[in-house]
Image (cartoon, rainbow, N blue to C red):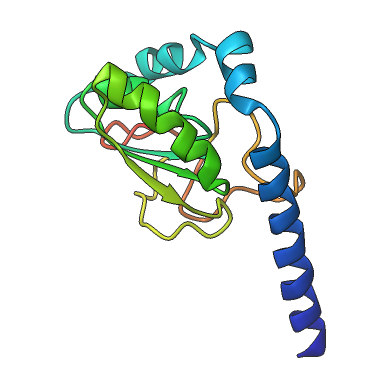
Length: 150
């Protein structure tokens, strides 16, 4: 039991550090300058449209969530750093994108996704532990009912 408690404490410390790092950096500029069109390309490639449920895991400022919402999808933008979600609120509102934002740990999502929903963030990083596999409720194969562009 003591070992599990130590891992839990270490896990909390690791995630707190990563949250602080993402909040302290200038990810909004990186997204705007380096990958500005990637979200739209992912939405188009996945065929996202009205009625699709799209969980954008590690959403950051919404570079994939916003185009998915504009395509008519029901979008939940989730990120470990609420500061990034808040930074993305203004561009989403300016563009007329309606989406839900939720602070969430990608390794333990607090909402259900369909078993066939792939969860692979546009920026390529969803977990502070790069050796970990995506959560059980995310898979590598796309399902038409719930395409994901995370």
